[in-house]
Length: 63
Image 1 (cartoon, one colour):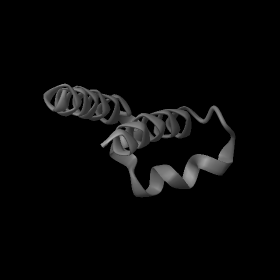
Image 2 (cartoon, one colour):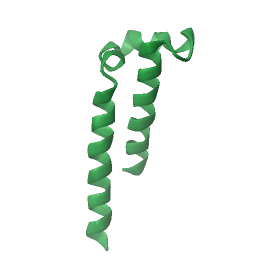
Image 3 (cartoon, one colour):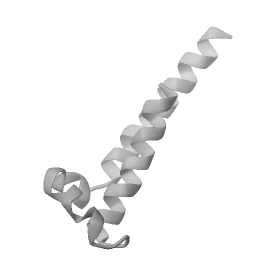
Image 4 (cartoon, helix red, strand yellow):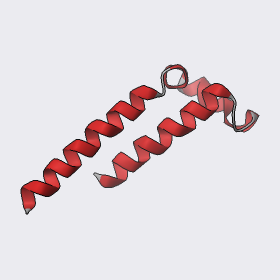
């Protein structure tokens, strides 16, 4: 679960950079496959936050 949470946060940053063209033209093909996420990268950030809360909930439950 922690891996998925981290992956969502990293993907959110990559889609944000690709949508704004901040890291050059090398990330522009990313927007061809995930145009929605290039326009709204915060959706992945919200999903990452939900996964983070869920992961922490599962960890606390085991203590």
